[in-house]
Structure formats: C-alpha cells, structure tokens
Length: 138
Image (tube, rainbow, N blue to C red; front, side, top):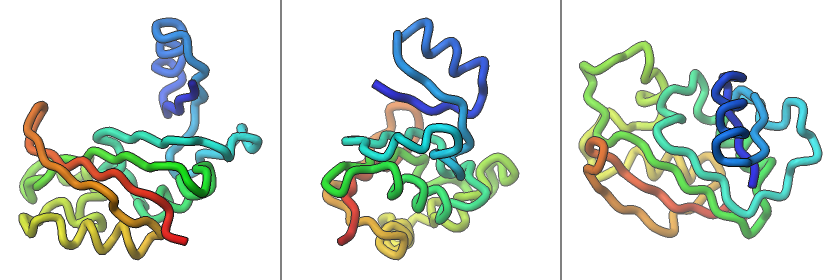
C-alpha cells in the first residue's frame, strides 16, 4: 500500500505506524520522485483538496497516477462555510464546496476535470461533508 504526505515527518510516522510505503510529495506534483507510480487502483483523499492552490492541477496529477479503470474517492467539507478559514481552504472557491447547491458546482468541476461521479453521499461524522466516488472520464 502506498501513501503520499506533504510533511516528511508525517510521512515517516505513517511508514512506521501503518507499515506502508509513504512518499513526501506536494499534491500538485504526485509523480515528483516516484515516476514509476502510475498504476494505482484507488486514490483516496480526505479533507485535502479544499486546501489546494490549484485543485484542477491536483485532479490532473491524480489522473496521471490512477489506472484507467481505477477509482478516485474524495471527501470534502460540504458545505464549507464561506466565512470559515479562507486562507487554509482556498480551493473551496474553485471546487464549489462553499455553496449549498446539492454539490452541483462541485459535480461540474469534477466533470470538467476528467472524472465522472459514480456515487455521492453526505454525512456529518467529522463535520458536514460529501463523499464522491469517481472514475476517469474516457
């Protein structure tokens, strides 16, 4: 099992605690030093992409490392309050998670960036959030 973590300290803890291979990369450049890693069955991202400076770039990186028949599972705060932590959640404006529109803008973003949603569900385990299960749009 593989994981990516921007913080080298957290990547080291993940390797030790979960016994997984974990590389330190920026989500905007997943193939940074692991160019051979392009065959993932699943990419899972929880409460991460709303922090991206360029969510579309992150989606392109995920498309590069995901198998053609692989799945991308993304969990985001939804709706992400407009008055909440604007600097830390800068990607929410591009993603559309700051709107309470049944995730229509988010669905359009997903489609425009090469994926189709195969399942969408909401929960409030940590906070109100949306779970999207997606495949590459061919």
